[in-house]
Image 1 (cartoon, helix red, strand yellow):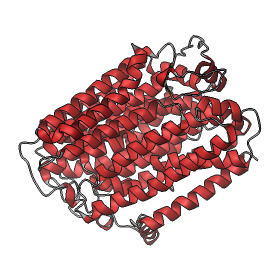
Image 2 (tube, rainbow, N blue to C red):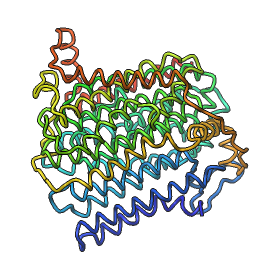
Image 3 (cartoon, rainbow, N blue to C red):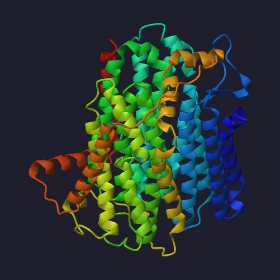
Image 4 (cartoon, rainbow, N blue to C red):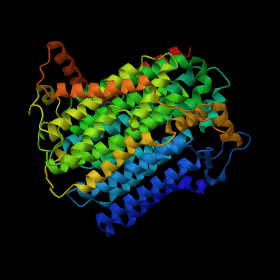
Length: 600
């Protein structure tokens, strides 16, 4: 049964998308919506089944039954373990929520192509999460990117939407070119596209300049999709203008998939070659992650538009996850995966709530909506609890991933790492808590110079008020929030995640299974419980978020130096795609130089 399900999780949404493209115009948009929701639910259920089916042994599915001969991979494969399947299940769950929210979100009749694109987006992301072939990952990368470009520009008649979608297209296309160039260099060197076979070939020799350049291009391609500094500029522009149902998928999981690919590519492909330089590579990845986490947190706190605020929350948390992956340990990888799933569900819930706010109040700007959300108590509760989830409230789901991260950092002399991570999560939680207090409780002034200077033009989001709208927004929001925070109560979750991550980072064992059909040894599941220090860090993050939210609700007066910094941050995020591409090129050069120095 398990081997049958593996291709179906990608084939079904793509086939249904083709059917809707052909016949969707002959039925109402409600029917298209139901079909999309049911398809997403089916994918979610199958991915959850795959989590349990792969718990004892990784599932290697070779399309067309073209299995490796003498250790040489000829065909294309999917490799499914519980961590990969959990990411795919997250994609499916968010797709279901997005389809439900669509029902009441759009005023107009939604054309069939919208749901076609959503299903193609779903199929592309699931395929990307499960693929173990580097070129196949690129194909799914492009498939989901093209769908995301079109969905972001759905309301292209608005100038801000056109600008955001254009930045998305250009920057991510450059990133895709970088990724394809890296793949081509690796193929020329190894003659392989399967990650396990690439890893075996590279492990035989010391990494030379070509390997370092290939690694840099591949990492830059994936980090551009993830939205790390300095490749992040497109993300806030795109997420701020995309329809809220699309943002549920964009913010909830698409960016995180880039980090998933970085981890998989490093461990299966490059860990053997770079093993002797792990400390230096670790320093580079963790450094990029921390800069991303802190800059994203500060920028989130400076926003009044909820969608742009949550876009910077995504950037900040991407930095947190990259820091976990960058530790280059099994526990770091486990922490990132658990954190990504729990956090993705919480961010999905927040975007469901933002959709409800936009429809009911006609705006998603916290200053314009000041006190107007008093009639939406349940939505306010979801936003507040989501904010606490962003701030890793103990002992709930996001805290589990954070606690594994904190303890992993301490085990490799990175005991200081929790401090900047706590600062980043406190900032993101504070931004959303401040908005909740202003919108739903009427706290704080109705105008704020600091926020007015950076306020969004999100007019395309509002302009209408639908008093009847409600249940189809808060039901999926509540379901996602409960699932994300409730992951903490899954028995043995951290230990299982650590055990499966330990297997994934064992490159020779993974290569033997993938290329030679070897049987994996039984997993040794460690016991894990958050330390006292982890609870203290979680409490500090929550208290910091509450304190910063309170400060943000006061009428702030910036000093000259602080005002200069805010102005510079605004100028850097100016919306000019030429500047964004310049930053991407500069970031590529700096990252390449750092990797070259790391492995010389």
